[in-house]
Image (cartoon, helix red, strand yellow):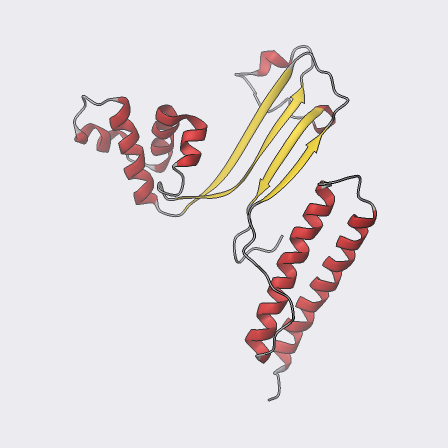
Length: 206
């Protein structure tokens, strides 16, 4: 069987990506600063994804396989810690990303949250109040908090896409931005601790 030129180009491109990822992983490994080095973990995640992509494409176009196996990968946690930091004032910055997969399920969950907050109100009030995704998220956060929203995300039609938590030293005056511009204080040079949860979709290669 002759492989069409277009498919050969696709395979060659995937192979080029794989060799680039191998080189990047090697360089990150040689320059590692210790266990759980974020640069190594990022390079590993990319290598795994492009290798998986090459393996799938090779099988799709030629019915051939590589000797590699790719067990289901859990979310990748990237961590940073500065053990020498001794701040007197710290801020904890949290970001969590979600893809809205099912708007109807999100509205239902938002109305359920409304019902828990206002149990004496009729169901019609919940329907009238929670009429769009933003309001559904508002009521869920109001009822359950950030962690509660995360626990209910999948049932609410939300697909987690990752998140990050930064603990960093604050400088005098930063406390005044808490309500006016809360994330303006973000500064990697002041980090005490950071953890990133990176979740890749099946069709996404970083």
